[in-house]
Image 1 (tube, rainbow over the protein chains, first blue to last red):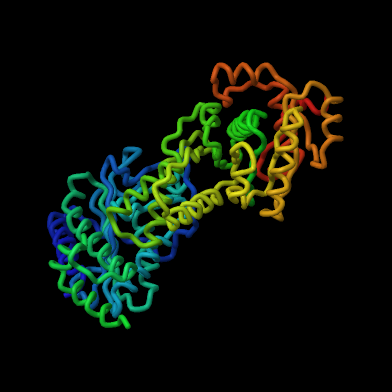
Image 2 (cartoon, rainbow over the protein chains, first blue to last red):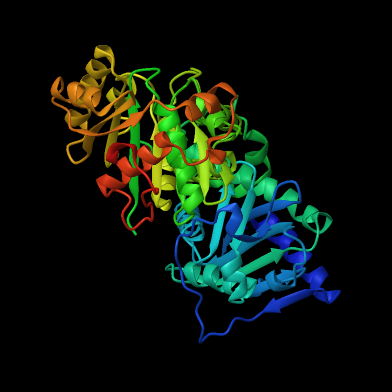
Length: 237
Length: 265
């Protein structure tokens, strides 16, 4: 069992369900054409497509687990790709699942999360709201004209995460179809944020008094968190 | 193209906001660069002069963020991402220009990490634009708090009053202490004649870059609260553009002088 086992189970069940229905596509990018990386400021007037406006549906989270073998690596999409979206704004979910050898899960989680934040394909401006798990992207018209696709975005994320020692496989799941198809991913997302919040609190606040802790219910549910807390406590002088 | 930061400071009521608005209007008109316009004056007149509403001020963002992190535990990297998000969401955009106001400070306790990360987020955001124009608060206080620490060029504005020149000199003293690489120049505003400008120049050690004539068009736009984006070519606007162009600070960014300059007359 890992910290996010239950959430990974939920996401993989979502993936399996939509694979079975034939609506989930696996995206392949051309390995010979790597989309350039550059931090971009995309103003409204240059925006060709907006993804993840919270009014339309927006969600992102990262899951990691050691030795998780049942997660298919690759970039998967439920819904239209960038060039197929006919509206100016579309809902967006981005769920990343990484498996590998993560001895210190908190440290590894932070490293992988930072790599995700540092993935900046040219012509894409991405903003994250970690406390709410929302993601908001502006795609420049110029990038769309040059055929930027979610395969490019997904492989940029996958490549950045795979470069981190210990990472063995990365699954990138995008949903662009509709808000109702993002909904089943929201509960595991909220649980993920609570687990990460509990880890941050244990590490940064050095408080091991559980009596008044707002994350007590999370630690009561996730056995690995209690184990993690015990290990941290033992390390204290 | 390198990033430039321009701040416009001086005593209250000397016309800083009008000059900032003229500059912002010209940057939009020419449309050659991405400009971030920051209304750092708590009285918030620049948004009105440009006809742009303040979606959420930086001080509101600060308060909201503090409320949000009281409910959720997030580390500094996530907090900085959070600030990037809300800062971008707070920008009011018009063509190649984005506008944000600092707003009035609302104290909700000491949250140094939020304050520091917010300052960093603004700097990070600012760097992505070709030019940042800051309409500073009246007086020396904001300069003292290093709000304009990364400014490349500080334009001090004064009218013909002795007090306005004294305030400009005080700001220059503080600015040169905290920002050794930035340049400072004085712009004289609402001047009646070249002789009056020359007479003022002899009373100050500051470098007088140019002067802007009293202009009824500016007064009319102010009184009628009309957007300076719609300001027609007029002597004051032409003078502002010519003065800024003279510094070369926007060379390569694309600002070019208007057809006529008051200072050349």
